[in-house]
Length: 266
Image (cartoon, rainbow, N blue to C red):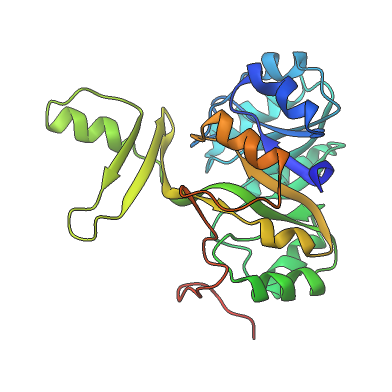
């Protein structure tokens, strides 16, 4: 199953470690067009010698951003595909006739078979929402028209804001600013891991989602591993033993507990 992993690269120094365990597909967040991840310039990505390179573009873009991205993508070298959130990327990729795989990745959408199959008629694959139960994911993967991408490991994204929330807070209360923090709600004591860059703020869950139970599902294109904010030793321990026991810092997310805010199957 390790050959089906699509791994977000958080540090280029770790690439050889990932290759040694058998990973061949890598996702590189594109500088200026991604939020919530360590990112890289297109020049850096073009120079990286791996076979299956995808670009992550997960910002909500305006017209100026789209025009800038169009120009940038004309300089691509050895890129297999785009993993994107804003459907404007899909629109101009088709208009320009880009010979790239397109994978739609909208964190809290794509949570029922009808909407997923709608997009599978237009893109190569879809990253399924990580707020679904095991049975719902099994049902969706069984009925999907094409192989899907499922979350396998990483902190679960809770929310994204285009505002620089940490910076604003620190300026208001005269605090030292750090773009990565752990915050805690005073009433519930629920903690969140916060990651900010110039284009917004992402809040992640406090525990790492471990979806090893999903490895037995069929009709899978990739299993998505987000290395962001994860200790490298812990990550390698998981990658070397996908079926190992859960650590104290991990959980299985919503696989056994249904959420109430998503659009259900009809």
